[in-house]
Length: 104
Figure 1 (cartoon, helix red, strand yellow):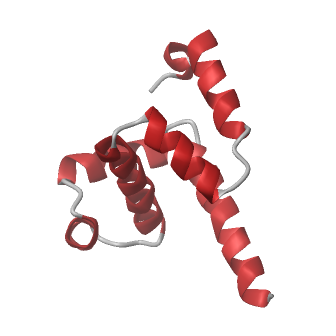
Figure 2 (cartoon, helix red, strand yellow):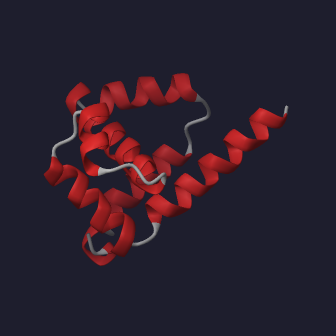
Figure 3 (cartoon, one colour):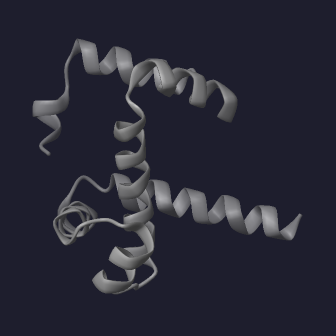
């Protein structure tokens, strides 16, 4: 998705609200009000697909483990490889956090 098509005052307000969330419980409450269960599960599934692609899983393994369609996996792959870098950036950050927690 082109960032220019996504940008706007309403989207800015949404993202600013998300950045105000302080913990996992707040996230659950906010997204419970904001989106349907199906929408949140779809977003979660896409992030999981991206993580598995980064780890080198095959489409078949990802499909079997996540239940994602090959169309969803392909879309995530395109975004992961040719998108704005959001998946890579956040997955790297999450990996660093996991490594820090393992050391502690």
